Length: 362
Ligand SMILES: [Zn+2]
Image 1 (cartoon, protein in one colour):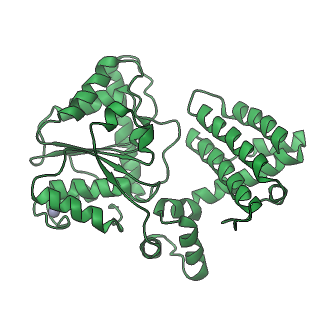
Image 2 (cartoon, helix red, strand yellow; image 1 turned 135 degrees about the vertical axis):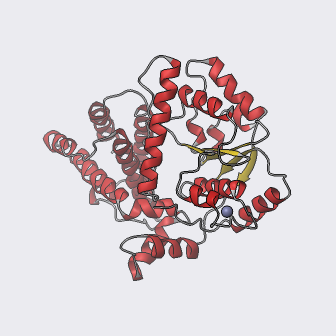
Image 3 (cartoon, helix red, strand yellow; image 1 turned 90 degrees about the vertical axis):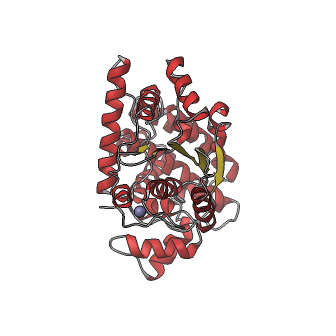
């Protein structure tokens, strides 16, 4: 499989291509913008352009470099995504483990280029920082340049344990090697450490046009949605292909589970809530945080309904009778649990505590 085409963001592409052709592209860029609008895809496009043997307004798409980038197999493209914390304690072993996790993540993305959100437990830890420093010190394998893409840069945890590795990374961003580019992406740049943010040139992406989202979904989803189903997906996506993908499959099952769990919580029947809990479909942390996200979204839909805004999705009947203030309190509780879920907690236990707290406000 190769990467899906980049959609939209014509102005950003034009500016990047212009800067690349004149040799003025900043070496450290922070691509910010809403979830699912293609920030990492634009970073990959930029990497392709930087590595292309015959770049123009777009990467040529045909040269060896372009083909390697599109197949996520270019040795000078380092796409760094959040990964689980390595288990090893020794720094070198940790970096090796991080390298392994990253290559597994890339294998996954080669298999299914339409990836969903990364597991909420994953981060860019010190092992990743070490790995980046190590790879940045090497000369390019294929050509003249190396490109590092740091996806979801908000998940960078630099104060974790080794000040030395953190400083090495900051130094790299401060003075990157002449042949090296760093493309960071973040939906919420405000959560990035100021010491990192201040070292980046900002590039802000907006939401995609509905026509772009529609074109992408019709061309890339299998089976392709059409007619009213496609229209509904596009409307709910709100200019985010990522949101449309969540809506179309995995997100749907999390939302169904969230609705039945919320109903069990609200009927207050202990055994029913326990049953619902036991039937929760997660097998990994990522699915657990997906579930919490879906619970928050469902409450958000209900809150919109309560203040007279048309809900995007049907709301469970029990929630439709709630007032907005209580629903907002409930959302705050879920967000708290979502935060706690990033740590080393037992999902079943966390969910049981959340159920008790929610039963008090709803
Ligand atoms: Zn090319």
